[in-house]
Image (cartoon, rainbow, N blue to C red; front, side, top):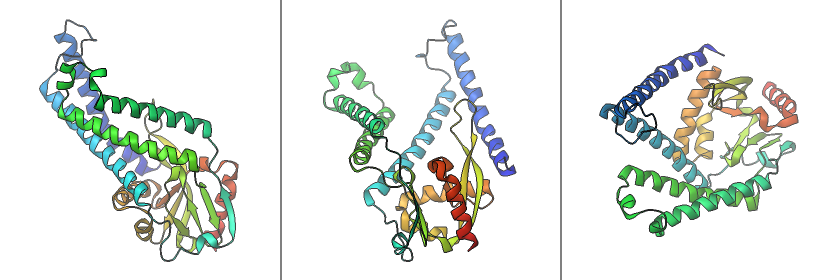
Length: 286
């Protein structure tokens, strides 16, 4: 773990620990106000803690909502994978192609699950009496309605995305030619990158939130530094997603000491990982 990554962990502790303390205080207030019954959660706790909870939820909601809207804009605007200099890259001699693994069964299960959730949400809107009592409907707060609206839009967006993936298939994860490469995990692409614009390539690690029980963990990556990352961002990403990408690049560059404009996950390359690394190193040296 680099010094910069240790600094990030220390700063996160200053955020997480106070929240844990507040949750503990909130629990004990409810516990002692309800005859020592920890399951009695309906009684309001301290009003200050309620406001803090609301602020935290609102911040998370705004951040997640912004990212989702940015991805939706990217999906529907279909930003080009090329800039003025990369049009010839996909048509030069192909060196490596890594297809996305076939997961039709899993995709079908996910798609049907999203369809089922969509039916449930539409029932809540168009036939609410089938699910709720009249007094329950009137008790919904404005914030709860906004959250529901957000998930309603998100669910139907996912129906379109997973439906397209199911019937059209996923694009290749990675293609490399004599002039450049394209990396497109999960259907989001950074566009075609020319080898001549790659300044440095380094195997590194970045903090990931996948450690559910142990907090952030180090995830291995191939870090790439570009001469002109902003030019590629403007060509590949919709306006809102560019803000998300810029923040990610700054965060990753801070951790990798400047080699984080694009991150490639080794797990996407399977048994061709060594071949991909060797190709990058040979092209950057040339």
